[in-house]
Image 1: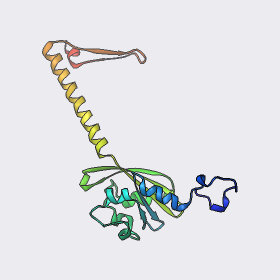
Image 2: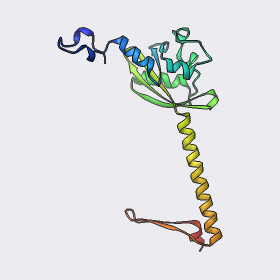
Image 3: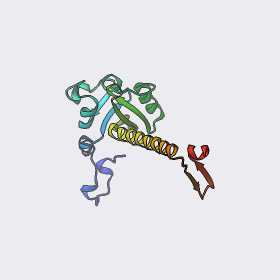
Image 4: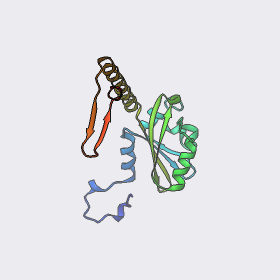
Length: 178
């Protein structure tokens, strides 16, 4: 929480005093998309990353969205509805996280909301590349397991493993067949 400038002890170095406008400047250059909404869910602020990520085709800059309802200007899809997620976060007055998407699911986002003095801070992070990479790794693992199963069947050999800590033994399908 920000302290009023007069609340700092007189010997506090000025470099350690965070002024409200300094906070806004930090948000403006943050790589994550930040949107601030008031108690009525009206957009009060979007940083540059929010403009780039969330609304490049909806409005030219953050000024044209100020005062609009968050779910009217942010083209975010959330299971159960973006409006419901934001309303829940406001009523809970606690941090709430949810998954969201843009462009009919083409881009995946992680979203978090944080209570503010008179509203919410909504943070979006584009995780499309990470999720695409995770999917590619899962598909490669599945293909590798399929190839191993085929090779064991053709060669007439099986495999097994033993977890010494849990004393759990697992056999491949071919080991069972043999």
